[in-house]
Amino acid sequence: MTQRFIPCVFYRGGTSKGMFFHPHDLPAERSAIDRILLAAIGSPDPYGRQLDGMGGGISSLSKAVIIGPSTHPEADVDYTFVQLAVDEPVADWTNNCGNLSSAVGHFAVDEGLVPATDGEVLVRIHQTNTRKLIHSRFTVKGGKAETRGDFVIAGVAGTGSRVRLDFLDPAGAVTGRLLPSGRPVDTLTIGPGETVEATLIDATSPIVYVEASVVGLDGTESPDAIEATPGVMERLERIRRAGGVAMGLGATPAEIGLQTPRVGIVAAPRDFTSLDGARVSAADFDIATRMLSMGRAHRAIPGTAGLNLGVATQVPGTIPHRVSRPASVAGEVRVANPSGLVSVGAVVREGVAGWTADSAVLFRTARRLMQGAVAVPDDL
Image (tube, rainbow, N blue to C red):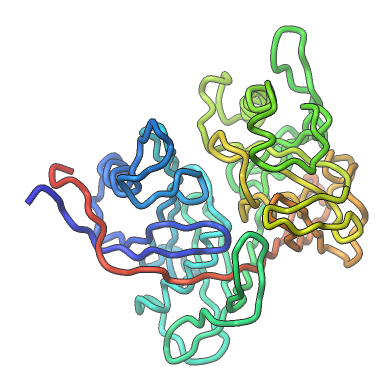
């Protein structure tokens, strides 16, 4: 036999898809896990399609999750996320995926890791990458996570059963501070004599924000249009890496990894056309964003990025706060992204040590797509 088959479940969580594993089905060494996950997803693929694996050629479809018994006294399960690059042999363990977080509770119940009776259940999740807690609330029917419902999320066709995710104490998930530099706006040097204003926020994950006009955009562009505009992606990457250095994630831009931090452009509301062809009115949302993930313009919005932006808009002086319309409901922000709209909630306050976030809330849907075993080369 030239292949080995490893037990695996394939899930959609929010606007992402990924492979889900039990830790006892994988080796103990991280480097060995990396090789297995990259082979299973089909990376690296110089053609950018991951045809020889389970991936789909973009960052939101190139992910893996490991879920096992909790090592935290206030959690039911441990959840570890791995972002896999498409065209490079890179497995990044530095961050969380907010979208796939919505499927973690489903997996825990369906796999018998957490006993549950029918009705609404709570699964307490220890997110090991960020060392934070997430509370997942969803419906169980017939002893399994319910997938059918009438809840709609932008970027996913059809409807599903709603999952509520409460990210507890999301500030400083990677850097230890909501404002890693201590300032709502920083001036980043991105080249000889070239500077830009940016806001650095670490809530559920670190993100560097700039106004869309900084790169010649207005916040209504599609991902394809962003990637096709000469110079935009290269300039945003320089901004992202400079922001990573300012956050303390590396000493030089070259030391900043592909995933962390992300970079996002933000803009005041304008009418735009979403990827499904629907016309969205500026009156229906509070702030527009286009996010980059793993070097590509995201077709929706990473879950942690939505949560981060919800927090950022509540901190006076930040660029997101500057361009955002005041929320119609206290703490709730309607965010426009290429696929449509998403609402996020945040509780933010200023204390003796500066600004912090008590919680952030996201609503998603999730569904188990396939279960069985994934094939990898036997020599792994």
